[in-house]
Amino acid sequence: MTGSVMVDNGTQVSAPQGADGLPTPPASPRPRPPAARRSTAMWTILVALVIVAVVTVWQGAQVGAFGVATVLAGAGVARLVVPDPGLVGIVVRSRTVDAAMYLGLAAAVALLAQTAPNI
Image (cartoon, rainbow, N blue to C red):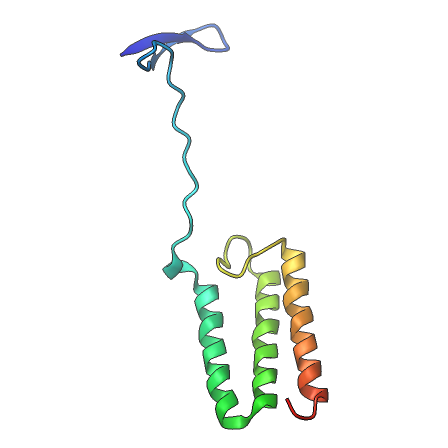
């Protein structure tokens, strides 16, 4: 069922009508969530952390802590460099807050790895 609707410039156009005789609004496109298999940043960091865990078992906790700090620093630099929405999976807040968080955590973990005698 169609009817005519007056648009802003004074012309009439036909529009689909609902059961109540009123024009139905156009359907708005819903944003689609990103597919998990396309979030390469998240998978890259996961693989890097698994590698760091294996290296930690072989080499010790201090080397593993430096590995975690390296992964965090890499995430921070990537968050600064890659334009939005390229890093699906690690984007949480604004670019500045995310990068500061990742780089700050990397510095803290590296400092603890360097100074703590028996981690």
